[in-house]
Length: 87
Image (cartoon, rainbow, N blue to C red; front, side, top):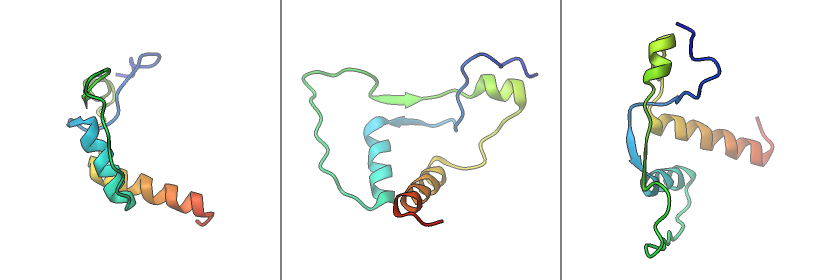
């Protein structure tokens, strides 16, 4: 093991998610309701993201401790604390 140094690796869970659904999850957790608008006449980039943590898992035995939802909640909570200047 340990041969992944200097190579890009993905850290996450084995979940395929549409970018729109990820944005909706984050907004829901943050308590905001933006009106998403997509210009479908000019689709560019990935509609969904799927990561494989196989390299990291093979080299280190890593398995995610938290689901995407729990991780997003933790990040949003921390960001709100930092923005408000509290610990």
